[in-house]
Image (cartoon, rainbow, N blue to C red; front, side):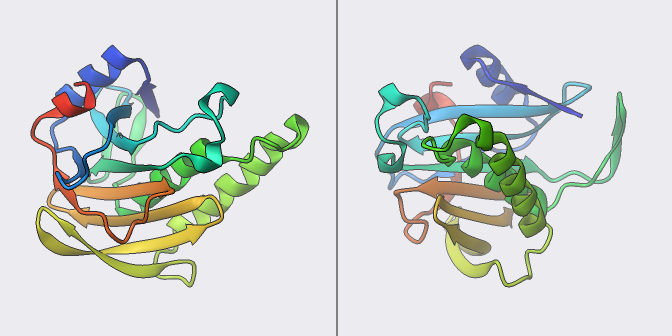
Length: 202
């Protein structure tokens, strides 16, 4: 079981406690950068987290039309074997783990706000199940191939688009990488390890 630290200070602390590098967009991206959330296992080990770029996604009316927001969020997942924590056995992480986190992240940021409230949870449950199935079948027809620079090296990714945005997943040294976005093309992105989180408010 994992817990998430959602407050600003909690997120900063979580990032600093990680034993793996965090990835974000490279220096060619000059827009706003912000901290996402960090996921940790029951024993406090940081397992994954995200760094945001562009508009911070918001479903609140005062944030304007969600469909006009432009953002790309990079998800970093530690490469872990099958292991135990305080609650039992945790599965090994994989590129599918990154794909799942990216897919569910996109859903949480872009679900249709015009939908009747009574239908939203059913819709979210259905879409979440679909995202899980897609993440579990990266070689299936739901994905195409995309090559992006990671630390300057051409790196293959699994890529898919939907009416809500795009999701991609791949790997770098010691981590699995996912990303999701809307309003920003994935094709022009380049990722790199972020040595200093100060640009993200860290």
